[in-house]
Length: 535
Image 1 (cartoon, rainbow, N blue to C red):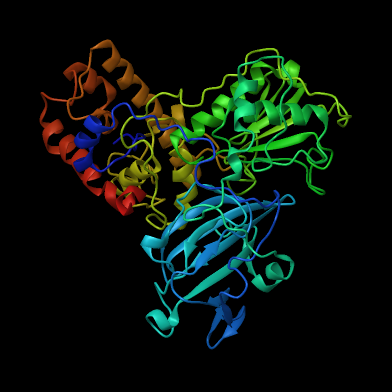
Image 2: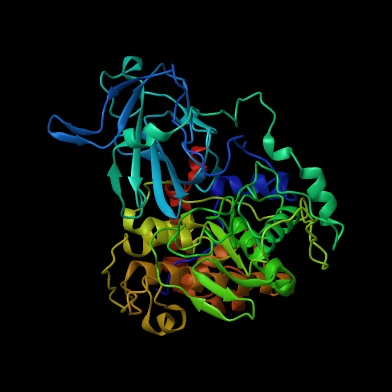
Protein backbone atom coordinates (compact mmCIF):
# COMPACT_ATOMS: atom_id res chain seq x y z
CA UNK A 1 0.00 0.00 0.00
CA UNK A 2 1.22 3.46 -0.72
CA UNK A 3 0.67 5.76 2.22
CA UNK A 4 -1.97 7.45 4.19
CA UNK A 5 -4.13 10.22 2.92
CA UNK A 6 -4.42 13.87 3.67
CA UNK A 7 -7.75 15.52 3.40
CA UNK A 8 -10.56 17.27 5.14
CA UNK A 9 -12.50 15.31 7.71
CA UNK A 10 -16.07 15.04 8.81
CA UNK A 11 -18.20 12.23 10.02
CA UNK A 12 -19.53 10.42 7.00
CA UNK A 13 -23.10 10.47 8.19
CA UNK A 14 -23.00 14.26 8.35
CA UNK A 15 -21.43 14.99 4.99
CA UNK A 16 -24.53 15.04 2.83
CA UNK A 17 -26.59 17.16 5.22
CA UNK A 18 -23.93 19.80 5.67
CA UNK A 19 -23.08 19.97 2.01
CA UNK A 20 -26.66 21.08 1.40
CA UNK A 21 -27.10 23.51 4.28
CA UNK A 22 -23.66 25.10 4.61
CA UNK A 23 -22.41 25.02 1.05
CA UNK A 24 -21.66 28.74 0.92
CA UNK A 25 -20.53 29.23 4.52
CA UNK A 26 -17.33 31.18 4.92
CA UNK A 27 -15.02 29.71 7.51
CA UNK A 28 -13.17 33.00 7.97
CA UNK A 29 -12.47 33.78 11.61
CA UNK A 30 -14.29 37.02 12.48
CA UNK A 31 -12.27 39.85 13.96
CA UNK A 32 -12.44 39.82 17.72
CA UNK A 33 -14.30 36.55 17.97
CA UNK A 34 -13.80 34.35 20.97
CA UNK A 35 -13.32 37.07 23.55
CA UNK A 36 -10.09 38.76 24.48
CA UNK A 37 -8.82 40.01 27.78
CA UNK A 38 -8.31 43.63 28.71
CA UNK A 39 -4.95 42.94 30.37
CA UNK A 40 -1.70 44.11 28.73
CA UNK A 41 0.17 41.61 26.57
CA UNK A 42 2.55 39.50 28.67
CA UNK A 43 0.39 39.58 31.81
CA UNK A 44 0.21 36.51 34.05
CA UNK A 45 -2.81 35.91 36.25
CA UNK A 46 -4.15 33.35 38.68
CA UNK A 47 -6.44 30.75 37.10
CA UNK A 48 -9.26 31.64 39.52
CA UNK A 49 -10.43 34.83 41.18
CA UNK A 50 -9.48 35.51 44.77
CA UNK A 51 -12.23 34.52 47.19
CA UNK A 52 -13.68 31.82 44.93
CA UNK A 53 -11.42 28.93 46.03
CA UNK A 54 -9.16 27.47 48.71
CA UNK A 55 -5.92 25.56 48.11
CA UNK A 56 -6.64 21.94 49.02
CA UNK A 57 -3.47 20.18 47.85
CA UNK A 58 -0.03 21.49 46.96
CA UNK A 59 2.79 20.53 44.60
CA UNK A 60 5.03 17.72 45.86
CA UNK A 61 4.93 14.20 47.33
CA UNK A 62 1.46 13.00 48.23
CA UNK A 63 1.36 9.47 49.64
CA UNK A 64 2.99 7.17 47.12
CA UNK A 65 2.68 9.62 44.24
CA UNK A 66 4.10 13.02 43.33
CA UNK A 67 1.38 15.63 42.92
CA UNK A 68 2.45 17.74 39.94
CA UNK A 69 -0.05 20.53 40.45
CA UNK A 70 -1.92 22.78 42.81
CA UNK A 71 -5.56 22.04 43.63
CA UNK A 72 -8.08 24.89 43.88
CA UNK A 73 -11.13 23.55 45.74
CA UNK A 74 -14.26 25.44 44.69
CA UNK A 75 -17.94 24.99 43.93
CA UNK A 76 -18.66 23.22 40.66
CA UNK A 77 -19.27 25.75 37.91
CA UNK A 78 -16.89 28.42 39.28
CA UNK A 79 -15.11 30.18 36.36
CA UNK A 80 -11.53 29.27 35.42
CA UNK A 81 -9.37 31.70 33.46
CA UNK A 82 -6.38 31.48 31.11
CA UNK A 83 -3.30 32.29 33.19
CA UNK A 84 -1.52 34.12 30.33
CA UNK A 85 -1.78 34.81 26.59
CA UNK A 86 -1.19 31.65 24.63
CA UNK A 87 -2.41 28.91 22.30
CA UNK A 88 -4.50 25.92 23.36
CA UNK A 89 -2.42 22.85 22.52
CA UNK A 90 -4.90 20.33 23.95
CA UNK A 91 -8.53 20.49 25.03
CA UNK A 92 -10.50 17.34 25.71
CA UNK A 93 -10.42 13.95 27.44
CA UNK A 94 -7.22 12.98 29.29
CA UNK A 95 -6.50 10.08 31.60
CA UNK A 96 -7.19 10.96 35.23
CA UNK A 97 -8.16 14.53 34.38
CA UNK A 98 -11.60 13.78 33.00
CA UNK A 99 -11.03 16.66 30.60
CA UNK A 100 -8.01 18.88 30.50
CA UNK A 101 -6.91 22.09 28.79
CA UNK A 102 -3.23 22.68 28.01
CA UNK A 103 -2.18 26.20 27.00
CA UNK A 104 1.29 26.98 25.64
CA UNK A 105 2.69 30.43 26.44
CA UNK A 106 5.73 32.30 25.12
CA UNK A 107 6.93 34.23 28.19
CA UNK A 108 10.07 36.30 27.75
CA UNK A 109 11.26 33.92 25.06
CA UNK A 110 10.63 30.76 27.08
CA UNK A 111 7.95 28.16 26.44
CA UNK A 112 5.72 27.48 29.44
CA UNK A 113 2.51 25.43 29.57
CA UNK A 114 -0.35 25.76 32.03
CA UNK A 115 -2.65 22.80 32.57
CA UNK A 116 -6.23 22.80 33.86
CA UNK A 117 -8.02 19.57 34.86
CA UNK A 118 -11.27 17.86 35.99
CA UNK A 119 -13.75 19.84 33.87
CA UNK A 120 -16.92 18.46 32.27
CA UNK A 121 -17.56 18.49 28.50
CA UNK A 122 -20.34 21.05 28.82
CA UNK A 123 -18.01 23.53 30.56
CA UNK A 124 -15.22 23.49 27.97
CA UNK A 125 -15.19 26.93 26.31
CA UNK A 126 -12.07 26.62 24.10
CA UNK A 127 -10.79 24.17 21.51
CA UNK A 128 -7.36 22.97 20.46
CA UNK A 129 -5.66 25.64 18.35
CA UNK A 130 -7.56 28.59 19.87
CA UNK A 131 -5.63 31.74 20.73
CA UNK A 132 -6.52 32.81 24.29
CA UNK A 133 -5.68 35.80 26.44
CA UNK A 134 -4.76 36.31 30.07
CA UNK A 135 -7.95 36.52 32.11
CA UNK A 136 -10.17 34.96 29.44
CA UNK A 137 -12.69 32.48 30.85
CA UNK A 138 -11.81 29.11 29.34
CA UNK A 139 -13.78 26.60 31.43
CA UNK A 140 -15.42 26.00 34.82
CA UNK A 141 -14.62 23.91 37.88
CA UNK A 142 -15.82 20.31 37.76
CA UNK A 143 -15.28 16.94 39.41
CA UNK A 144 -14.62 14.83 36.32
CA UNK A 145 -11.95 12.12 36.35
CA UNK A 146 -10.09 11.01 39.48
CA UNK A 147 -11.19 13.25 42.35
CA UNK A 148 -11.46 12.60 46.10
CA UNK A 149 -14.05 12.49 47.40
CA UNK A 150 -15.94 11.55 44.22
CA UNK A 151 -18.85 13.73 43.20
CA UNK A 152 -19.55 17.43 43.83
CA UNK A 153 -17.79 17.39 47.20
CA UNK A 154 -14.52 16.74 45.35
CA UNK A 155 -14.94 19.59 42.84
CA UNK A 156 -11.67 21.42 42.22
CA UNK A 157 -9.33 22.79 39.58
CA UNK A 158 -6.09 20.85 39.24
CA UNK A 159 -3.59 23.44 37.93
CA UNK A 160 -0.07 22.67 36.64
CA UNK A 161 2.81 24.71 35.24
CA UNK A 162 5.43 23.17 32.94
CA UNK A 163 8.72 24.74 31.91
CA UNK A 164 9.53 23.79 28.33
CA UNK A 165 5.96 22.74 27.49
CA UNK A 166 3.63 19.99 28.71
CA UNK A 167 3.46 18.22 25.34
CA UNK A 168 7.00 18.96 24.17
CA UNK A 169 9.30 17.35 26.72
CA UNK A 170 9.18 19.94 29.52
CA UNK A 171 9.05 19.39 33.27
CA UNK A 172 6.50 20.23 35.95
CA UNK A 173 7.25 23.18 38.24
CA UNK A 174 5.59 24.39 41.43
CA UNK A 175 2.54 26.51 40.45
CA UNK A 176 2.92 28.45 43.70
CA UNK A 177 5.82 30.29 42.03
CA UNK A 178 3.46 31.36 39.25
CA UNK A 179 0.85 32.53 41.71
CA UNK A 180 3.36 34.63 43.64
CA UNK A 181 3.66 37.08 40.71
CA UNK A 182 0.18 36.64 39.18
CA UNK A 183 -2.56 39.26 39.17
CA UNK A 184 -6.22 38.53 39.79
CA UNK A 185 -7.86 37.52 36.48
CA UNK A 186 -9.93 39.99 34.47
CA UNK A 187 -12.71 38.02 32.85
CA UNK A 188 -13.55 38.20 29.18
CA UNK A 189 -14.97 35.74 26.76
CA UNK A 190 -18.00 33.44 26.86
CA UNK A 191 -20.60 34.57 29.37
CA UNK A 192 -19.05 37.94 30.18
CA UNK A 193 -21.00 41.14 29.87
CA UNK A 194 -18.04 43.49 29.43
CA UNK A 195 -17.53 45.01 25.97
CA UNK A 196 -15.05 43.16 23.83
CA UNK A 197 -11.85 45.16 23.79
CA UNK A 198 -10.86 43.78 20.40
CA UNK A 199 -13.52 45.90 18.73
CA UNK A 200 -11.63 49.08 19.66
CA UNK A 201 -9.91 50.54 16.62
CA UNK A 202 -11.52 48.11 14.19
CA UNK A 203 -13.21 50.85 12.19
CA UNK A 204 -9.97 52.85 11.92
CA UNK A 205 -8.10 49.77 10.77
CA UNK A 206 -10.77 49.02 8.18
CA UNK A 207 -10.44 52.57 6.86
CA UNK A 208 -6.66 52.21 6.67
CA UNK A 209 -7.09 49.03 4.66
CA UNK A 210 -8.74 50.97 1.87
CA UNK A 211 -6.29 53.89 1.88
CA UNK A 212 -2.81 52.78 0.79
CA UNK A 213 -0.07 55.20 1.77
CA UNK A 214 -2.25 56.83 4.43
CA UNK A 215 -1.33 57.17 8.13
CA UNK A 216 -1.93 53.96 10.05
CA UNK A 217 -3.92 54.15 13.30
CA UNK A 218 -2.32 52.75 16.47
CA UNK A 219 -2.46 49.04 17.12
CA UNK A 220 -5.53 48.32 19.31
CA UNK A 221 -4.45 47.54 22.87
CA UNK A 222 -6.42 44.29 22.72
CA UNK A 223 -4.25 43.08 19.81
CA UNK A 224 -0.82 44.09 21.10
CA UNK A 225 1.45 46.76 22.51
CA UNK A 226 3.71 49.12 20.54
CA UNK A 227 5.82 49.83 23.60
CA UNK A 228 9.59 49.77 22.88
CA UNK A 229 9.04 48.89 19.20
CA UNK A 230 11.00 50.71 16.50
CA UNK A 231 9.21 52.47 13.64
CA UNK A 232 9.52 49.68 11.05
CA UNK A 233 8.10 47.12 13.48
CA UNK A 234 5.19 49.40 14.38
CA UNK A 235 4.43 49.95 10.70
CA UNK A 236 4.43 46.21 10.01
CA UNK A 237 2.23 45.44 13.03
CA UNK A 238 -0.32 48.14 12.16
CA UNK A 239 -0.47 47.18 8.49
CA UNK A 240 -0.89 43.47 9.25
CA UNK A 241 -3.63 44.24 11.78
CA UNK A 242 -5.39 46.35 9.13
CA UNK A 243 -5.06 43.71 6.44
CA UNK A 244 -5.93 40.68 8.56
CA UNK A 245 -8.64 41.35 11.16
CA UNK A 246 -8.70 37.62 11.96
CA UNK A 247 -5.41 38.19 13.80
CA UNK A 248 -6.20 38.79 17.45
CA UNK A 249 -2.71 38.94 18.98
CA UNK A 250 0.56 40.48 17.79
CA UNK A 251 3.48 40.10 20.16
CA UNK A 252 6.32 42.62 20.16
CA UNK A 253 9.08 43.74 22.50
CA UNK A 254 10.34 41.62 25.36
CA UNK A 255 13.28 42.45 27.62
CA UNK A 256 15.31 39.30 27.08
CA UNK A 257 15.57 36.63 24.42
CA UNK A 258 18.26 34.30 23.05
CA UNK A 259 18.10 36.38 19.85
CA UNK A 260 18.36 40.19 19.68
CA UNK A 261 15.33 40.86 17.48
CA UNK A 262 12.63 41.30 20.14
CA UNK A 263 14.75 43.08 22.79
CA UNK A 264 15.88 45.58 20.13
CA UNK A 265 12.27 46.37 19.17
CA UNK A 266 12.74 45.15 15.60
CA UNK A 267 10.49 42.08 15.66
CA UNK A 268 6.83 41.15 15.97
CA UNK A 269 5.10 37.78 16.31
CA UNK A 270 1.77 37.52 14.49
CA UNK A 271 -0.19 34.79 16.29
CA UNK A 272 -2.32 32.59 14.01
CA UNK A 273 -5.76 31.53 15.31
CA UNK A 274 -6.49 27.82 14.83
CA UNK A 275 -3.04 27.35 13.36
CA UNK A 276 -3.37 23.54 13.30
CA UNK A 277 -6.15 23.70 10.68
CA UNK A 278 -5.93 24.25 6.94
CA UNK A 279 -7.55 27.66 7.41
CA UNK A 280 -4.90 28.65 9.94
CA UNK A 281 -2.11 27.67 7.58
CA UNK A 282 -3.78 29.58 4.74
CA UNK A 283 -3.98 32.69 6.93
CA UNK A 284 -0.29 32.45 7.83
CA UNK A 285 0.61 31.92 4.17
CA UNK A 286 -1.40 35.02 3.23
CA UNK A 287 0.39 37.13 5.84
CA UNK A 288 3.76 35.92 4.56
CA UNK A 289 2.76 36.75 0.98
CA UNK A 290 1.57 40.21 2.04
CA UNK A 291 4.78 41.05 3.88
CA UNK A 292 7.01 39.66 1.13
CA UNK A 293 5.10 41.55 -1.57
CA UNK A 294 6.02 44.82 0.16
CA UNK A 295 9.29 43.78 1.75
CA UNK A 296 11.09 46.92 0.60
CA UNK A 297 8.54 49.30 2.11
CA UNK A 298 8.43 47.34 5.35
CA UNK A 299 12.26 47.35 5.35
CA UNK A 300 12.08 43.62 6.00
CA UNK A 301 15.13 41.77 7.24
CA UNK A 302 13.60 38.28 7.33
CA UNK A 303 10.51 36.36 8.47
CA UNK A 304 9.90 32.86 9.83
CA UNK A 305 6.82 30.70 9.33
CA UNK A 306 6.39 26.97 9.93
CA UNK A 307 10.06 26.19 10.43
CA UNK A 308 11.27 28.12 7.37
CA UNK A 309 13.16 31.41 7.42
CA UNK A 310 12.85 33.71 4.38
CA UNK A 311 14.98 36.79 3.74
CA UNK A 312 13.70 39.98 2.12
CA UNK A 313 15.35 38.76 -1.08
CA UNK A 314 13.35 35.53 -0.99
CA UNK A 315 16.15 33.18 0.10
CA UNK A 316 14.68 30.34 2.14
CA UNK A 317 16.27 28.20 4.84
CA UNK A 318 14.67 25.25 6.63
CA UNK A 319 15.41 25.56 10.33
CA UNK A 320 16.32 22.68 12.64
CA UNK A 321 13.63 21.45 15.01
CA UNK A 322 13.64 23.56 18.18
CA UNK A 323 10.94 21.53 19.93
CA UNK A 324 7.28 22.58 20.07
CA UNK A 325 5.00 24.52 17.77
CA UNK A 326 5.84 27.95 19.20
CA UNK A 327 9.60 27.46 19.04
CA UNK A 328 9.26 26.17 15.46
CA UNK A 329 6.98 29.08 14.47
CA UNK A 330 3.97 26.97 13.60
CA UNK A 331 1.57 29.08 15.67
CA UNK A 332 2.88 32.49 14.58
CA UNK A 333 4.61 34.39 11.80
CA UNK A 334 7.79 36.07 13.06
CA UNK A 335 8.72 39.30 11.24
CA UNK A 336 12.06 41.06 11.81
CA UNK A 337 12.63 44.49 10.21
CA UNK A 338 15.63 46.82 10.11
CA UNK A 339 14.33 49.12 12.83
CA UNK A 340 14.18 52.74 11.72
CA UNK A 341 14.57 54.27 15.17
CA UNK A 342 11.90 55.04 17.71
CA UNK A 343 8.68 57.08 17.24
CA UNK A 344 8.91 60.86 17.61
CA UNK A 345 5.21 61.65 17.35
CA UNK A 346 5.06 61.82 13.56
CA UNK A 347 2.43 59.83 11.67
CA UNK A 348 3.40 56.32 10.62
CA UNK A 349 2.53 55.86 6.96
CA UNK A 350 1.31 52.53 5.63
CA UNK A 351 2.71 50.81 2.53
CA UNK A 352 1.74 52.45 -0.74
CA UNK A 353 0.62 49.11 -2.15
CA UNK A 354 -3.00 48.41 -1.33
CA UNK A 355 -3.56 46.68 2.00
CA UNK A 356 -5.73 43.65 1.15
CA UNK A 357 -8.60 43.98 3.61
CA UNK A 358 -10.00 40.53 3.06
CA UNK A 359 -12.33 40.31 6.05
CA UNK A 360 -15.35 38.27 5.01
CA UNK A 361 -13.79 37.67 1.60
CA UNK A 362 -12.12 34.31 1.99
CA UNK A 363 -13.24 31.34 0.01
CA UNK A 364 -15.76 28.88 1.41
CA UNK A 365 -14.21 25.78 2.90
CA UNK A 366 -15.25 22.27 2.01
CA UNK A 367 -17.21 20.35 4.63
CA UNK A 368 -15.11 18.86 7.38
CA UNK A 369 -12.03 20.93 6.69
CA UNK A 370 -12.05 22.37 10.18
CA UNK A 371 -12.15 18.95 11.83
CA UNK A 372 -9.03 18.24 13.84
CA UNK A 373 -7.36 15.65 15.99
CA UNK A 374 -9.00 14.75 19.29
CA UNK A 375 -6.48 15.04 22.13
CA UNK A 376 -5.28 11.67 23.38
CA UNK A 377 -6.61 9.74 20.38
CA UNK A 378 -3.12 8.78 19.14
CA UNK A 379 0.15 7.92 20.92
CA UNK A 380 1.73 11.09 22.39
CA UNK A 381 4.82 10.89 20.19
CA UNK A 382 2.60 10.96 17.08
CA UNK A 383 0.28 13.80 18.05
CA UNK A 384 2.29 16.93 17.20
CA UNK A 385 3.35 15.48 13.85
CA UNK A 386 -0.19 14.55 12.84
CA UNK A 387 -1.25 18.09 13.74
CA UNK A 388 1.55 19.57 11.64
CA UNK A 389 0.92 17.25 8.70
CA UNK A 390 -2.78 17.98 8.96
CA UNK A 391 -2.18 21.65 8.27
CA UNK A 392 -0.01 21.31 5.16
CA UNK A 393 -2.82 22.06 2.73
CA UNK A 394 -6.49 22.99 3.01
CA UNK A 395 -7.72 19.51 2.09
CA UNK A 396 -5.89 17.82 4.96
CA UNK A 397 -6.99 17.16 8.50
CA UNK A 398 -4.91 15.61 11.23
CA UNK A 399 -7.83 13.38 12.22
CA UNK A 400 -8.01 11.74 8.80
CA UNK A 401 -4.27 11.13 8.75
CA UNK A 402 -4.55 9.51 12.16
CA UNK A 403 -7.49 7.34 11.11
CA UNK A 404 -5.56 6.14 8.11
CA UNK A 405 -2.42 5.64 10.16
CA UNK A 406 -4.39 3.36 12.46
CA UNK A 407 -5.56 1.36 9.44
CA UNK A 408 -2.12 1.20 7.86
CA UNK A 409 0.13 0.29 10.78
CA UNK A 410 -1.76 0.61 14.05
CA UNK A 411 0.77 3.38 14.89
CA UNK A 412 3.64 0.89 14.75
CA UNK A 413 6.77 2.92 14.03
CA UNK A 414 8.70 -0.18 12.93
CA UNK A 415 6.02 -1.84 10.82
CA UNK A 416 7.03 -3.62 7.58
CA UNK A 417 4.38 -5.22 5.39
CA UNK A 418 4.70 -8.37 3.33
CA UNK A 419 4.93 -6.21 0.21
CA UNK A 420 7.75 -4.10 1.66
CA UNK A 421 5.82 -1.02 2.84
CA UNK A 422 7.72 0.64 5.68
CA UNK A 423 7.07 2.53 8.87
CA UNK A 424 3.98 4.02 10.51
CA UNK A 425 2.74 5.50 7.22
CA UNK A 426 3.61 2.33 5.23
CA UNK A 427 5.54 3.97 2.42
CA UNK A 428 6.79 1.89 -0.47
CA UNK A 429 10.46 2.79 -1.12
CA UNK A 430 9.74 4.21 -4.57
CA UNK A 431 7.10 6.58 -3.25
CA UNK A 432 9.17 7.49 -0.19
CA UNK A 433 12.01 8.80 -2.34
CA UNK A 434 9.69 11.52 -3.68
CA UNK A 435 8.05 12.64 -0.45
CA UNK A 436 10.42 11.85 2.40
CA UNK A 437 12.43 14.59 4.14
CA UNK A 438 14.41 15.05 7.36
CA UNK A 439 11.55 16.69 9.24
CA UNK A 440 12.92 15.96 12.69
CA UNK A 441 16.39 17.29 11.71
CA UNK A 442 18.19 14.21 13.08
CA UNK A 443 20.47 13.96 10.07
CA UNK A 444 18.65 11.17 8.25
CA UNK A 445 15.56 10.70 6.08
CA UNK A 446 13.78 7.57 7.24
CA UNK A 447 10.31 6.12 6.70
CA UNK A 448 10.68 4.68 10.21
CA UNK A 449 11.11 8.10 11.86
CA UNK A 450 7.72 9.29 13.09
CA UNK A 451 8.23 12.91 12.07
CA UNK A 452 9.61 12.10 8.62
CA UNK A 453 6.92 9.50 7.91
CA UNK A 454 3.91 11.57 8.99
CA UNK A 455 5.04 14.77 7.29
CA UNK A 456 5.84 12.79 4.14
CA UNK A 457 2.37 11.31 4.39
CA UNK A 458 0.88 14.79 4.47
CA UNK A 459 2.95 16.00 1.53
CA UNK A 460 2.05 12.97 -0.56
CA UNK A 461 -1.63 13.26 0.09
CA UNK A 462 -1.67 16.98 -0.58
CA UNK A 463 -0.33 16.10 -4.02
CA UNK A 464 -3.02 13.43 -4.49
CA UNK A 465 -5.78 15.77 -3.35
CA UNK A 466 -4.65 18.52 -5.69
CA UNK A 467 -4.60 16.15 -8.66
CA UNK A 468 -8.08 14.87 -7.96
CA UNK A 469 -9.45 18.36 -7.35
CA UNK A 470 -8.05 19.45 -10.71
CA UNK A 471 -9.59 16.44 -12.47
CA UNK A 472 -12.96 17.18 -10.90
CA UNK A 473 -12.73 20.81 -12.04
CA UNK A 474 -11.92 19.60 -15.56
CA UNK A 475 -14.89 17.21 -15.55
CA UNK A 476 -12.67 14.14 -15.92
CA UNK A 477 -13.55 12.71 -12.51
CA UNK A 478 -16.85 12.78 -10.60
CA UNK A 479 -17.33 12.53 -6.84
CA UNK A 480 -21.04 11.86 -6.12
CA UNK A 481 -20.16 10.74 -2.57
CA UNK A 482 -17.67 13.54 -1.97
CA UNK A 483 -13.98 13.95 -2.66
CA UNK A 484 -12.87 12.28 0.54
CA UNK A 485 -13.40 8.70 -0.61
CA UNK A 486 -11.54 9.45 -3.85
CA UNK A 487 -8.50 10.75 -1.99
CA UNK A 488 -8.46 7.56 0.06
CA UNK A 489 -9.03 5.34 -2.96
CA UNK A 490 -6.20 7.05 -4.82
CA UNK A 491 -3.87 6.34 -1.95
CA UNK A 492 -4.77 2.69 -1.94
CA UNK A 493 -5.18 1.97 -5.65
CA UNK A 494 -3.25 4.85 -7.21
CA UNK A 495 -4.33 8.12 -8.76
CA UNK A 496 -4.34 6.56 -12.24
CA UNK A 497 -7.08 4.14 -11.19
CA UNK A 498 -9.30 7.02 -10.08
CA UNK A 499 -8.70 8.90 -13.34
CA UNK A 500 -9.26 5.82 -15.51
CA UNK A 501 -12.58 5.08 -13.79
CA UNK A 502 -13.69 8.69 -13.70
CA UNK A 503 -14.27 8.29 -9.96
CA UNK A 504 -14.05 5.45 -7.47
CA UNK A 505 -11.97 2.66 -9.09
CA UNK A 506 -13.90 -0.10 -10.82
CA UNK A 507 -13.13 -2.97 -13.17
CA UNK A 508 -10.75 -5.04 -11.04
CA UNK A 509 -11.27 -7.49 -8.20
CA UNK A 510 -8.74 -5.67 -6.00
CA UNK A 511 -10.92 -2.58 -5.99
CA UNK A 512 -13.79 -4.63 -4.55
CA UNK A 513 -11.94 -6.78 -2.02
CA UNK A 514 -9.25 -4.28 -0.98
CA UNK A 515 -9.88 -0.65 -1.93
CA UNK A 516 -13.56 -0.42 -0.96
CA UNK A 517 -13.12 -2.05 2.48
CA UNK A 518 -10.01 0.04 3.05
CA UNK A 519 -11.84 3.31 2.39
CA UNK A 520 -14.95 2.29 4.33
CA UNK A 521 -12.91 1.25 7.37
CA UNK A 522 -11.13 4.59 7.57
CA UNK A 523 -14.30 6.62 7.07
CA UNK A 524 -16.08 4.62 9.75
CA UNK A 525 -13.29 5.28 12.27
CA UNK A 526 -13.03 9.04 11.78
CA UNK A 527 -15.15 9.84 14.80
CA UNK A 528 -12.57 8.10 17.01
CA UNK A 529 -9.96 10.69 16.03
CA UNK A 530 -11.91 13.84 15.21
CA UNK A 531 -12.68 16.46 17.84
CA UNK A 532 -15.90 17.09 15.87
CA UNK A 533 -17.30 13.94 17.47
CA UNK A 534 -17.43 15.68 20.87
CA UNK A 535 -19.04 18.93 19.74
